Length: 182
Image 1 (cartoon, rainbow, N blue to C red):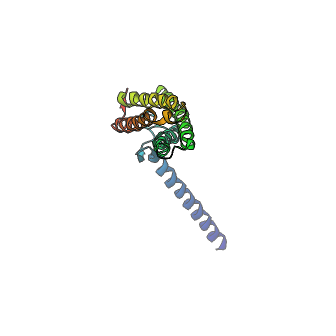
Image 2: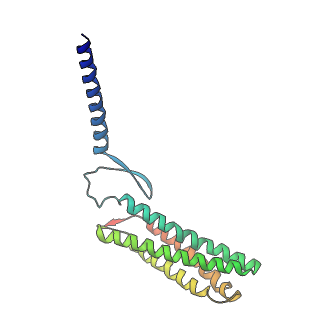
Image 3: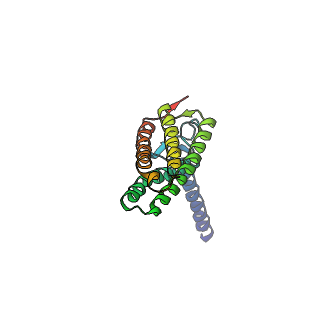
C-alpha cells in the first residue's frame, strides 16, 4: 500500500510540474509583452519581425536620445545663467553640454539609421529632416559658443540654443505622428 501511495504521489508531482511547464510555455508562446517607446505593447511572436522594434535597439536608441534632449535643453538654462551672472563657468557648461548632446545625438541617429536599413520600417520624413535640422542647429550653436565671453552667448548663442530646443519640440511632434511601413 505504501508503494502505491508513493507511486501516486510521484505521478501527481510529475503531472503537476508538466502542467505548470505547459501553462508557462503556452502563455509565453502565444503572446509576449515587450517595452517600446510608448509603453507596453502586445504582439504575437509569429508576426513578421519588422512589426515591432527589437527591444535592445529600442532601449539603446532611447538611452542615447536622452542625452541630446537634456544637453540641448540645459544649454538654454546655462546660457541664461551666463547672461545674468557673467560667470565664465556657465559658458563652459554650455560648451560641454552642446558637445555631449552632439556626440550622443549622432550616435542615436546612427543606431536608428542602421535599424531602419535592416528592417522595412521608416520614420516620417518630417521627423528625419527635423533631426538633421536639430543636429545642424546644435553644431552651429557649438561653433558660436567657441567665441570668447559675452559674444559667445549674447545674442547669437542664446538665440541658437532656443531655436535648437524649439526644433527639438517640433521634431518630437513629427515623430509622434507615427511610423510608415515601406
